[in-house]
Amino acid sequence: MSLEISPTTLRQAKITLSLIAINSLIFLIVNVILGSEALYLLAQANHLIVNGQRIWSFFTSIFVHVDISHLIFNMFSLLIFGMFCEQFYAKWQYLVIYFVSGIVGSVFSFLFYLLRYGGSGMLVFGLGSSGAIYGLMAGTYLNVSRDSNRWYFFGIIYVVSQLFLSLDNWAHLFGFGSGVLLVFLFRKLEYKNYPKNKKKSRKSLGNFKNRLKFRRFFLKKSKNIPVQKTSEQETFDHFIRILQVESSIAIEQMAEFLHLSELDMMKRLIIWKKKLPFAISGEFIVVESMGEFLRALEDLSS
Image 1 (cartoon, rainbow, N blue to C red):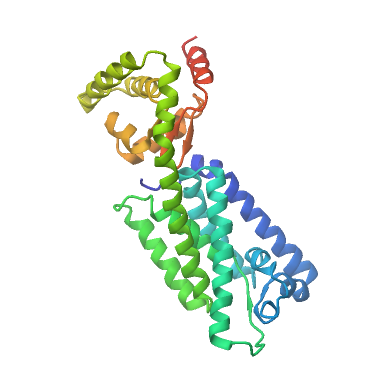
Image 2 (cartoon, rainbow, N blue to C red):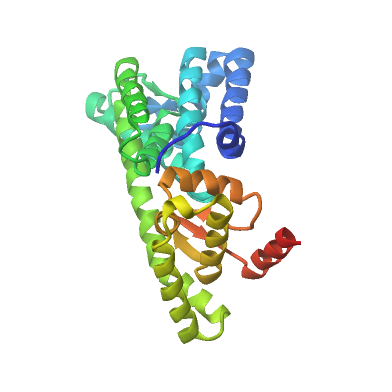
C-alpha cells in the first residue's frame, strides 16, 4: 500500500491522537508541575530493577520524556507512523503493537544495562516512547509500497537521528523487531481464519453450487472490464457485488478485481466506509453483518 497524509486520515487517527494527548498530559503533570522526582519515579530505573524493584517501570517509562524536544520529536513520529498503522490494522492490533513493542524495548534495554554494567548498581534510567514507535514504524513499512520513496526517506532520518540522539538503541532495535514479529503473526492469523470466513459466507447464501458458479463467472468478468470504461459509480457497484459474494476479501485482491492501484483502493475504502458498514481488518475487507450491509444498500438506493 502507499501512504498518504490527508485531513481524512488525520481525523480517523483517533487512537494515535489519544496517545499523543495522554503523553502530552503526562509530560505537563510530571515534568512541569511535579518535577524531577516524579519523572525518576516513573522512568525505567535499571539499577533498582536489578534488585527486583520497580518492575512496573518497564510499562510506565514509555509514557515519560526527558524534555520538551524529546516529547515533540517522539509525538511527531507517533503521529506519522501511528496514523498509517490505524489504516492498516484493527484497533486491538494497533494497541498490541504499540504496548508490546514498548515493553519489549524496555526489557531489552534493561538486558543491555546488565551486559554493560552487571550488578554494579550504576544509576541508569530509561524513558521515552521510541521503542513503541519503532514497533509502529515496522508495522507501517511492512505494508507500504516500495515506490513510496519519501516515506522510506523519513524513516531513515528518524532512525539515524535516534542513533545519534539516544544511547538506548537496544530499545529501538527490539521494539522494531517486535513490530515485525507481531505483523507476521497477525497476517498468519488472518490467512488462517480466511477460509472459515469464506465458508461462513457461503452458508448465508444457501445454495453452495450456484454461489460458486456465480462467483467464478463474476470475478472472471470483473477482471476483463477495461479500465477506461469503468466509471466511479460502476466501480462502486462492482465493489458492492463482490462483497455480497465474498464477505471477507483481501484488499489487494479487491483492488485487482476493480482494476485499481492499492493507493486508489485505500482512498475509495475511506470514502465508501462512510456509506456502508464494512470493516478493514489487517489486509482484509470484512462485512461483519450481511443483514446490516444489505439494509444500508436499501437506504442508499431509496
